[in-house]
Length: 159
Image (cartoon, rainbow, N blue to C red; front, side, top):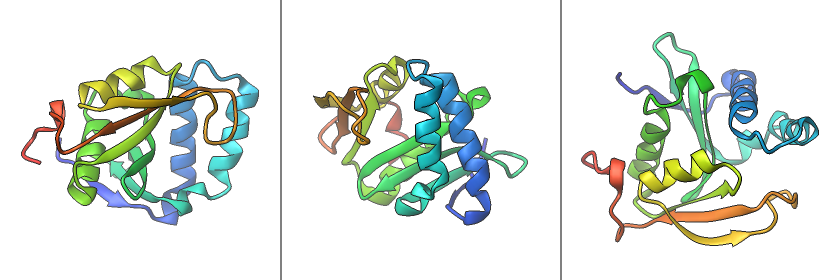
């Protein structure tokens, strides 16, 4: 599949919030419905305008995944559940490397074992851990990074 990654446009805001919701319900099974609603409010309130968002569009022009960057930190990366395993997350990270270089950081919920495994496959390593997430909630975060000195695993596609 040819990748069609575009910058954020307000036109996609509601679709991305819906995509986020679908992905979180599917992957963040450790969150209660109340927790999901708390974060949903944050997503709806315009947090996507505070970071550099890149969207991968599917064959019919609809968002299938998106990533938010703050400098070299991946603040968010979400893929439609039915699109998992099709390379969308990897392509978005490759896009980040092309734009920002090979020194990237990301925080992953400790309970989200699939996300941790995904980033490990791509060459990210754990550099630290926090007891609370960035909203001060009791969901431990693993601090990961990949640097130019590390082998990039699946990312070595000519980048």
